[in-house]
Length: 69
Image 1 (cartoon, one colour):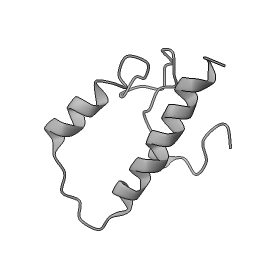
Image 2 (cartoon, rainbow, N blue to C red):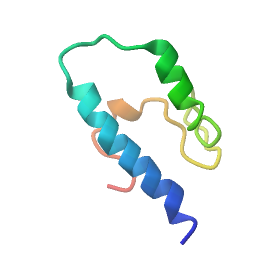
Image 3 (tube, helix red, strand yellow):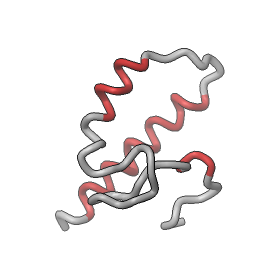
Image 4 (cartoon, rainbow, N blue to C red):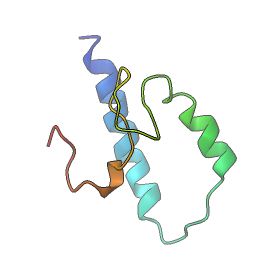
């Protein structure tokens, strides 16, 4: 059960953030994004596909589908 909690939270974050990426304005606050990612960086590599506890995020948005479908 505890194993699925991080995966579920990641899926919720990904779904919630997808609407933010779909907006037309490309402006954003890099400092705020960095602060938010500090919560994710413990388990995910941002600059490689190498796994920590969770998958690496490099090239994530270039994929048509995630590995779990």
